[in-house]
Length: 266
Length: 108
Image 1 (tube, each protein chain N blue to C red):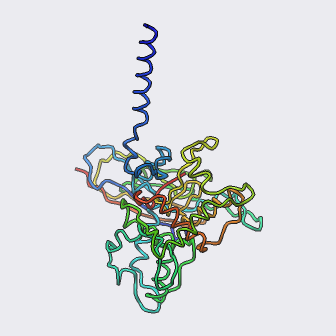
Image 2 (image 1 turned 45 degrees about the vertical axis):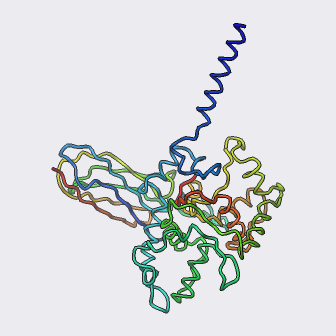
Image 3 (image 1 turned 90 degrees about the horizontal axis):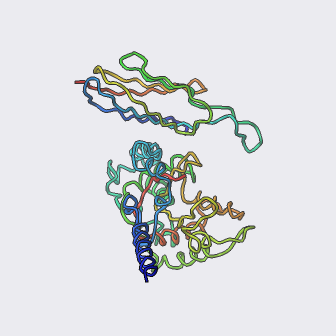
């Protein structure tokens, strides 16, 4: 009987302790939505600290550049972004949280980088920025900053639905010499260890992100290319239809997570 | 990044004798000289090799940087504020390019 009571007490203490330990860390609570977790949650406290301070966050070097580009007159029509959207860009609050988005005029899905370039070519008569160029990264980061803290909210129904399905199929298809699908790491084994690393859910709410391993800001397209190389698959070109569809599907997995751009990751 | 941008965080006001934190960030690729291009040719070293801070013309902080320091170096240091004046920051890279920035501090 005494043994039983002791075992009962020990059990109670253990279950109480696990209850306490399983509580979400309050410092990361605003980087989660239900059971969805931003990459921020998986980052080291030191890395989070770099992101939390807008001064130490190196992504803000691109924000500064983006702000300069925003008011710079460019193209044959003699306009800057600010000429239509205002000098402070507050008009773009929330806009980037809805991308990738179906564009009725083009009849296809486009991401925020492509939207910026379309604005440049169609409305300003200026040349499109090259993929992954400093200028495009800077402008993307600046535009996404206007939506910082707002929940990711992409449309997956209606005309976007076939693209979403295509992205989902890409996500779940095995490829490369390692014969792996995105879902195997980020869904089936998300939150578990791969050697010393915890596999994140692969959320994209922080892109463009400053990766300490890249030593630069990079787009989600670049990350996709790196993921594909890591499973020894042939990376697709920047902005390929597959990658844009994938961007929508991955964004929809993180529906409700706050936009964190520019985030800092290892 | 082709154009080097600098960011400063200096408190605009401080009490006399107070120790304040100075933070700086410069965008620079910090090419270590150990990397090679796609043709296998070494990419020459190009790093910010010296950083200095002067307080009303007098040097108060100097740092020699080495190739192991990552891109976009963030440098922070404490400073005793004892007079109102200007802080001048200078970054010098291997190509001899000099980047300057300055900030005002009011000491009461």
